[in-house]
Image 1 (cartoon, rainbow, N blue to C red):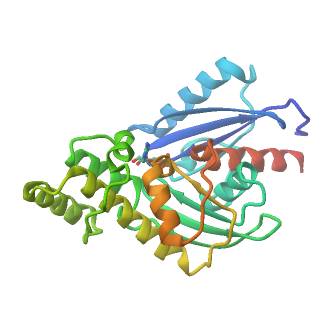
Image 2: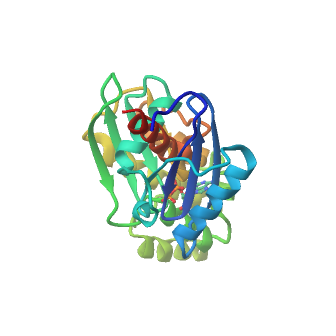
Length: 259
Ligand code: ADP
């Protein structure tokens, strides 16, 4: 198939927590997000249908999938998260030389060449420490939600949290609550620990600016600020950063359709 301007393609990022869909027609894109739930294929199909009804093509466009559940759909193209996040971030942050993505179940750093090719990457997908899952567990222990965490942290002095393992950190947090340490200081301490861990994970790749910070955890502005402090350089959080993987998949799908 030859993709002309106005011909739609779809990029679908089937993540551990959320499915992101991007419909792209060569000049504009439309997005949608929904929980992955217990049946990723069902959730992805219904999200895609909903976005197509809202804004996209009448017929099913060529699909490219990425993310941990990428093989659950019958797609024209299946690509790794590294390739897709790199492509998507480079569109969202022109000239991007480094991507830090923290999602529900993993954290990754990707170094890009000046022309946007992946030069090297590092990934933690072995344990929940420093990921959205860690943050969700801590939010539950503190009686709040991930969306509210950043408001609580608001500039508080961080209390040093020593455990990085989610299970031990949960016990440590409960112990601190019982000792009377303020919720604000505990949350600031958790944010600082995620920032330190991320900076140390990507440090070996010598991140250069501009750095795009993407994924669900980048929505927390206190973590963004502390990550900048730990790295010693600013990061850019593009407003559609959570869609970087899906957008990259759509771009790759379009390219492959044209070749
Ligand atoms: P995945 O692709 O693995 O599903 P995402 O990049 O979609 O990951 O991010 C999902 C994660 O983002 C969730 O685990 C959640 O904890 C985290 N998250 C969502 N909203 C926020 C927020 N406002 N602040 C911090 N973290 C958030």
